[in-house]
Length: 287
Image 1 (cartoon, rainbow, N blue to C red):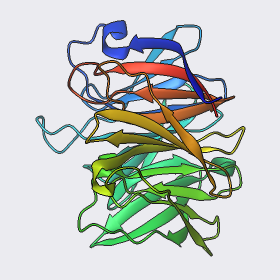
Image 2: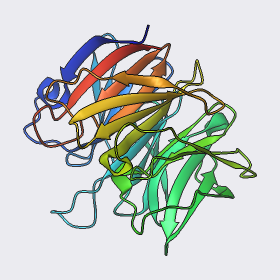
Image 3: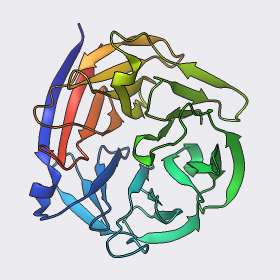
Image 4: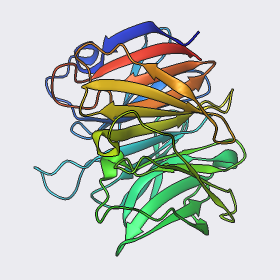
């Protein structure tokens, strides 16, 4: 039987005593620690399963005091992490203790994720053309892969999402209708399209985020259904078979980010500015 069970729920700004925050993204390491990026305060917060919190000062926006940049976050299993500074078009690297380890330019960056052997995958759009750039652990460009062709004239960085499996296959979502998730082979030789039939008009749904469960290989898609005020989780098998949909018990929160610690657990973060903003919920899911 399909089921969603709440393991824990907390509000990150309240937990940290923040008067103002701009939470952008979340990811997890192999130990189950959840990392949350905050573009307003220029920090990344590490929340352990036991309840301890570490705060790391990270790159601050340089485009102007009133222009915070969205910080897209990607954490490796070894707890090193990267931040894509969307406005300033660069990627910064940090070691496992949160210490700055260097940065490199990433023109047109929209999203990023960490791959096997420390690789960094960056999805960029320059003059209307998308591509996936593959960087080594130090930020050296080693390959460029084709990206899926978009269906919309403009891409919103907050809805463009990337994830990767242990074999280096890359999963892409552009967020806006039509409902599509693409699987790009690790060498760029093939691009599969995943979708499903919807019970409502396709222009009423957004894919807010995607996350791959490293243990099961299930790809989860977090949906915001505009017409019905609902949030749903779609599940796809490693070969793209649609497995089913789960409803999220979200109260006032409207979750915009999903990440997977594995073991049938998911973490959801409300990155909005309304009621429930900053809520971080850990759930257990079964299909």
